[in-house]
Every structure is written in C-alpha cells, then in structure tokens.
Length: 163
Image 1 (cartoon, rainbow, N blue to C red):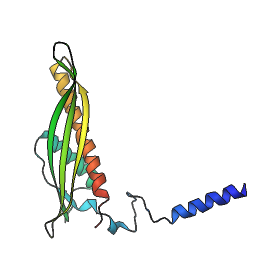
Image 2 (image 1 turned 180 degrees about the vertical axis):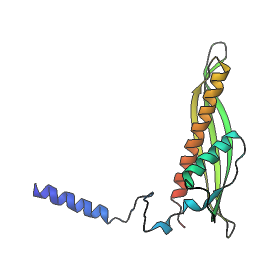
Image 3 (image 1 turned 120 degrees about the horizontal axis):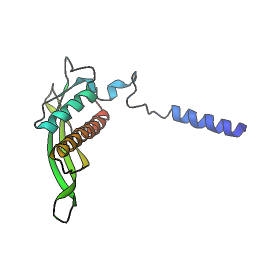
Image 4 (image 1 turned 60 degrees about the vertical axis):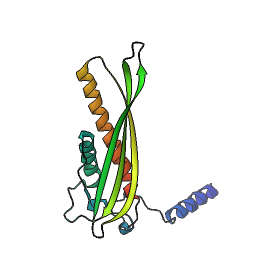
C-alpha cells in the first residue's frame, strides 16, 4: 500500500516538473512563448463559405472583439468541391461529400514577413433530398459545419506557433 502511494506521488512529481503547460491556460506565465491570437486581424475571404469561415475564425481567435493594435494578419483562401457518393440506378445523386480546402498565411504586420503558412481540409457528407429547399438547407448546414471545422483546425495550428 505504501509502495503504491509512493509510486503515484513520484509519477505526479515527475509530471509536474516536465516543462509542459496547458496550451489554452488563462493565466499562462509563459504566454510570450506562444503566439498571441488576440492580436490577429482576419482579412475578408470571398464567397459565402469564406464569410462563414471568417466569422468562425473571428469568434475563435478574437472572442473579445477585433484587436485595437493588430500585430498579425491572417490571409485565407479557400476552394470548394463536391464528390458524389451515392447514385441511384437512374443516375440521380443521393449523397454528396462537400470538400473545402483552406490555405492560410500569417503575416507579421511590422515587418510584412510571412510567419506561418499552412492548409486545412474539411470533408462533410450530406444527403441529397427530393425537395429542393430541403437540399439547399442541408447544403447550407454542411457549409457551416465545414467552416467551423476549418476554423478549429486553423486555430489549433496557429496556437502552437512560437513568437
């Protein structure tokens, strides 16, 4: 019993001193070592899915509003394609994949140098229904889900960049 207790305490002591800290900790003492996402301005992204992605990025990167004095600019370009998954005997589609790819660049505004370049991809499947309005609603929801996935992926990648 005492041996188990000592083993657990020693493992916890080792983990406490390993040097890692939570990525999204609120009062992180070492916050200068990770990019300050509150100082990122997001440039406009064309098309409706680009607008949805920009809104999601704005909510995830700067939840307290646009920065007063931005340090970085995030430029995103997107491409959207679809792939037929289910086809009936009469060649009508029943299921489709929406594939959205985003390429992004983080630019330091003071030196105008590119700090980070990356890409993200989201694949969302949806059913093609008999009613046109229902299909449009499902497609709109798929675009919203893709934008949220891409924004989360971009935020995760930007979160680990060192200053």
